[in-house]
Image (cartoon, rainbow, N blue to C red; front, side, top):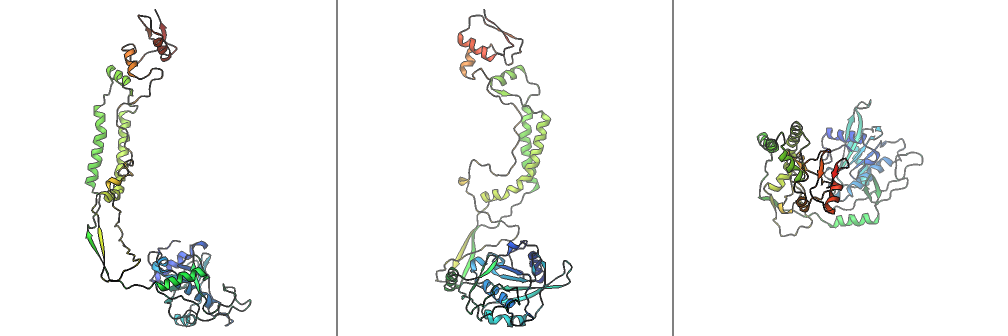
Amino acid sequence: MEFDTRRPPVRASQYLELVTAVRAASAADELDWLEWKSTLDFRPKNKADKSARAHLARAIIGFANRQPDVALRNVEGYGFLVVGVDPEGYHGVEEIDSVELERWITPYVGEDIDWRTTYVHVSEEGHDRLPVLIVTVSPPSWGDPIFCIRKEIPPPPRGESDQAKDKDTIREATIFVRRTGRTDRARAVDIDRLGERLLRKQQALDLTLSVQQGAVSPVVTPDEALDRVVNAERERLVSRLKSASATPTVEQMMRDFTSQTTPDPRSRETYLEEVDQYLEALRRALPRTLPEVAALAASRIALRLHNHTHIHLKDVQVRLELPDGVLALPPTDPDDRDKRKPFPSGLPKAPRPYGPGKREPFVGLPATPAWHRAFPAVMPAVLPPAWEIGWRGPPSFSLRRTCASACPRTWRRSWP
């Protein structure tokens, strides 16, 4: 659902954003902190129909019986019941004075639960200030009692209401809990969990948090620094062109053949285009690597939490909130980094420097020192097909076989 759950809505515009998000949601988006209802009739024609009040009481008790640590994951622990809208559309609800509505519901939920109501008005999809009710239930706390129905709620008269979930009488002391997408009667495991919440009293805290080491370091990428890095990389790659000869000599060709290398298939212009494309990608990627570099090189921050009381505090959680634009990075130890991975990661791969590349082994002639000693000057770097290979003395069987397998069939071989 498209709604920011980091903070609860407190202003009318934020409540309207919640209503709009419910309209755009799917049926599966009801969560443990949010429930919606198309409409509820708090003033039915038959005054014996208490189904709307029962639904509201169920929801309030279900939200109040949540576990504090789970509830804090969204909207700071608050629970919301939205009446008058669902994913199918805007339906609206009769606007009733909040004091009167509280007078109707309090006998069923008691006075220990903190809840309130508000209305927002929708002017979309052809509606003109259509009222939508939002019921807000405050976050649960450790040590809260187990909340239950305080007064029996009779079932709706037969055939009078289709909006009630409970077709039977809701007895006094019935416990409801909130699950993902629904509010149910409590089971034994739910009561055990609520009992643990009751026994886990909220402890009084007298704590101070101080910075013992380090400070927030600005991490920026000046354009001058980017220019220096990119220009140095350009100089390194272009310097290979200066040392490469435009026209290879026969001696160079002989060295390339004996050293198992081949000339670079790229032209100088093609290589320079590869360099320019790489440097553009490098300039874009360098700022994205700053968090990784900062985690390795920036000063570390050490925080100290001091308990000024003599009471052992159990399961204390400290949450560090950072403003926009500030990152908290776990420090990286150089000895723990995987040496097989590039650092920093995410940088583009540089083109191969301009120059000769490795040649595949020549099929038929073993590239071993023994081959070089056996043929000291017989085979030039390139043998044209019309050349004739001759021998002054009778070759050995191994030489005859080697030459026959190495020379193409179009070559002529004469043996004295």
